[in-house]
Amino acid sequence: MKLFFLDSKLALRHLQSEVVSGQEIAALLEDRALEDGMPIYLDDETMMPIEPHCSWGRSLSNDELRKGTMNDYGRILARFSDHQEHRGRDVLSATESDVKAYKRVRTSLQRRPIGDSAWGKESQLLDRFYGYVVDDAKVLKHRPVRVGSRGRNPLAPRLKQKMDIRHLTLGQFRYLRDVGLGGQLPDSRVDPSFRGWSPHRNRAASDLALGTGMRWQEWATVLLPELGIGVGHPVKEVEFTVQACAKYGKARSIYVPADSMKGLDPYLLLERPEQAAKSAKRLEKRHRDLFVVSRIDHGSGLVYGVLDGLEKVFTMSAMDPDLRRIAVHETDVGLEALAVFICQGGLMPGADSWKRYRHAAWRRMVELANENTPVLPRKRWRWHDLRHTYALQMLNYLERQMDGEEPDQVARRRRHRSYLASHTRLNPLLIVSRRLGHSSPATTYEYLEYTDDLLNEFDDAFRGWVGELGSEATYAQIASHAFRLGKRRTADAAAG
Image 1 (cartoon, rainbow, N blue to C red):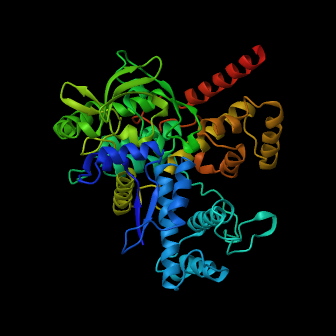
Image 2: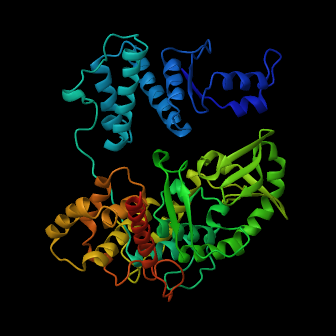
């Protein structure tokens, strides 16, 4: 079995055949409304479609799942199909023993067993596939695995997973940002042997992530106009809407404080212009593959440009990561990416690149650690740790502003439950939940376990975190901004 993923643009640009043209294939795919990323399964010898795999892939496309999600799902089913082939069976003849054997291989027997979280995703996918085969395609009369009580997936992990909340102290963050990412020595001197690329970019990214609480895909794909850069007047702080890059496409407002904006200045003034100039010619050669922006209406958030030879208009918040990555505009040096963060190729770095940056930072942090450096986290840090740190600092600060210090943890939790009923708009838990874009306050509630951590006691939340040492600015402005929004919504609701 061979696994491929649909990409209409590749067919349009590269397919050359006397039988059918790339334009005809692209037109057919558009007519059938097939989404890029849809998995396609072909026989090794005949290269003919394999069923019910391909029909199931089409169902994923009809559900309008994201390209990356369909890629992951496609690989999981291909892996299970290979497992069945090695056992002399196929997916339609799978028994409960086959599925349990596959689970044992993935979670215990293979060289690097996967954990409960990864297996939970695979078990959910297999349950979804057989649900399609039985209920929609009606190829089988029943699933190979018996349904558990209350419809529970019997393949799912038995242990309920807690959120892996990992946060940084002020010292740990400074060490990560300045030494790991920024190329300094632990005593703040410049390290002449540092060979890292774009230290200002990576430091700016960490400041933006910490100061806003955005997820990786949200801050890594942010565009210059969303931060008020290039609007024709200086901007100290900014607020914009994130949606297409947000989890589940759930829209929410992002507030970027002045200190995070200042943290971008060294990168925007020193590194980025040089990177953009070096990559301009390369981007010019690829202009047919790019979304060339001709005009941005900052008031309405509309972006006008040419994509695949056609005039297009997009709402900025509705631009997905793939479109943002290829968005460019004309400047004095030529074509330049519209994304804030760019890499050597001139476009925004992908997930693998950001992963490589943080891994390199971690190795450097470990190598330079001594008795004077902060205690390093037990596990290698993640970009998501900055989001957790933001949440905990904000929750701590808002709690103190609402009720003062309260040593009794039981009383604090009881207070939060009362907030849910009487102070919906000004409840610290709900404010942080809204800022993080959590689907349920129950997710944010798990942070309460950490709000009494003595490592995070400060007079003001985030004092001296973002920006340069000695800065008097604090992230109390984020809290006051959140309070103003809550009060404004309450007033609007009362007026309505």
